[in-house]
Length: 381
Ligand SMILES: [Zn+2]
Image 1 (cartoon, protein in one colour):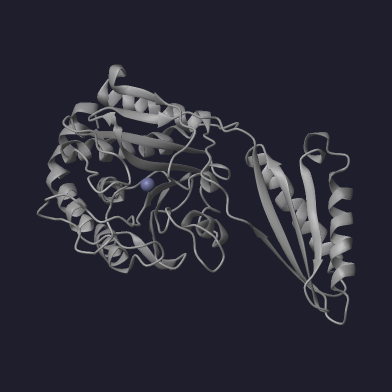
Image 2 (cartoon, rainbow, N blue to C red; image 1 turned 45 degrees about the horizontal axis):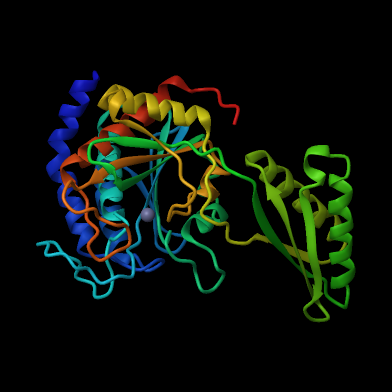
């Protein structure tokens, strides 16, 4: 499809995208309680022809289309924000003290538009996985994890080759778009290992795990300086807890330590005992894959023009994107939705978006996904 045809086609979807956005705007829900939101998303995506999984990370919706590789993930957050809306909208939030003050209503609507177009495109040269992720703004009281960490835990990312995450941005002029281009600074990722040893063996097993871990990293010049073990604690006669952390320089670091940790635990518990390895919540950090960023940037330029493509560098962003980008080659795509009048500030009671450009978000996601499916870029990052 040529560029103008695509913009024309998504313009025809504009009304529907706006309707979805408004319907979702009226029902903002807190993290891990997005029940009605998930009903809405699941019903629509199912009607487009997607296979639906509900209850992923409690209230998330994962929708799949087609088979084979590459497998491209498209991610939107679905949670509302705890602020009382102060806008006179016909479709205002009906939920007291909650509002889509981060624009997740618009994110979901744009992603659904792209999902619909992809389903209408006939046979795909690969497959699509839509990740409607709960709770990006808050963490679970139970285990201090946000929605993306739980998606990781439940294996949602395991079969993905690339991922595009989408977010509207009221600080970018409406009708412009940007791709986050931070390469990621060094991060600290912490882990804990609960050892169940039975009959007073727990502390001995825990110590053996730590010895194994240092043994497996001692000849690895890149990695050995990155590891620290903070404590080994006795929890009860049967249980011990090991806590530590490593500096995460990117996907390879995480993979290396994940393998080393699992191998060390398995070796120590071979004859007796069990272990449970978990990673603590990662902060809102970024790490983008240059290749995917380039693909998305190219589509922004070809659809909107060079002058409307913004390079975005951010130190902070209210988004739990890092757990994705540290595992799957990813890009975070922003669509400018800034209203020309008063500036609208994220997470405040008067936050609002320029709805008239939402179809552009759909076009950008759709075209970037097609490009990743067709070009199958070789990635080095
Ligand atoms: Zn957000």
